[in-house]
Image 1 (spheres, rainbow, N blue to C red):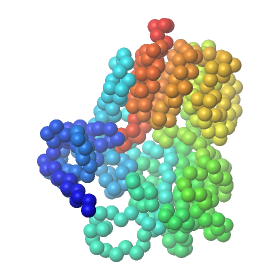
Image 2: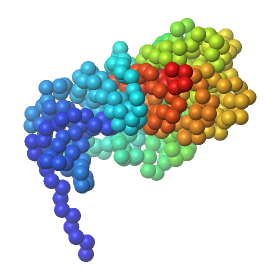
Image 3: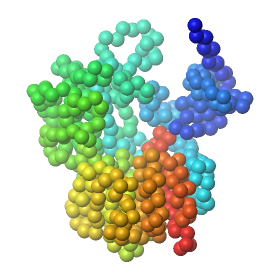
Image 4: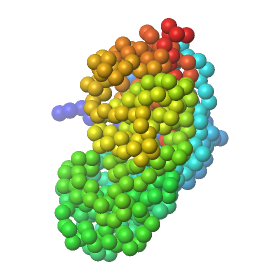
Length: 472
């Protein structure tokens, strides 16, 4: 018979001393570090330990004995359950301080390279309703909160529309209001949910993989254009038409009303046919007079205003005079490539997703940009020594990889190509720091600029300029 595990302890009167990785807070008990979500520096709390290792533990706050001086009341009624905005209880200036320190820690502890003074983080002008894209899930198994469970109330209606609960793929938190996108998004989500209830439509069952109403994506451009993409989990033309017609009648301001029938297990629609119900099959963003088409499968930075600030930093760091050959790696829909093209001789963009490359070409064409070219494929397969020999050695490389950073083969090709300057845009300072260490043999970091794209989360973008050492 197996031995019964000793219950984890309740730690009383622990002082939260700082903020750690992944947005957690930390405190210390003797020689052990304890990580908890939703803590604020200065809080004195009781912590129920949920995981214990030799040098650290993880837990959850059961009681705030004394709130810290920086703790503030979160705006969202779903705070602490949703998990999407884990720093709402911190004032925005404190959030920026934490993100600045996150960048400093990553570059000093992981990269361990010579660094210039790191510039103060650029905060977001809007800290609410800043997202241009939101995705909601419809479910017949909405998450019951701890309060609902403790009440003993029998809840027969489990249909909901909102966000997935972290760690529970088949549970969705029913959202009343999300503050990250314009309230139009909430009104549209609630309308579809209520329409489904009133007309007896099935909500998706994430375990059994069936149900008509599956997901809703809402994109809202800085130009005022709106895209809505309904995803249906059943091929029922009559019901689908009724839903789409109802949305069109209720929300005539939608400029791109689309839908997709997704019968797969996962929610991704990148490999699915998108059908236009009404309007155009894209919306447009604008930046310095340039227009960028954004389709249902397109990647575009989710904070439009702050994306402009990010791209301005990248362009400034590139130091273009009009004579340079620029490579834009991980170009996406060519936003950065087209944004810097006016100040470059020629720009070559490379991206893994073929549809994104087609968007990049269209974005060049609609803006009359003729000094760009784009190639699709896995970066480590496309960006080879042979490719560089055929297209020319770049003067400047701009790289904006995914969170995992750059493949080592890509780093080696960059080192062989030896551009005069590299501008590295990253959404993950830790993997960026790892890559900077790999580039250190030939490059020196000459500028660092953090940019906050996602208020109330721990995520931070960071732009680094590297110059070839022999030219310094």
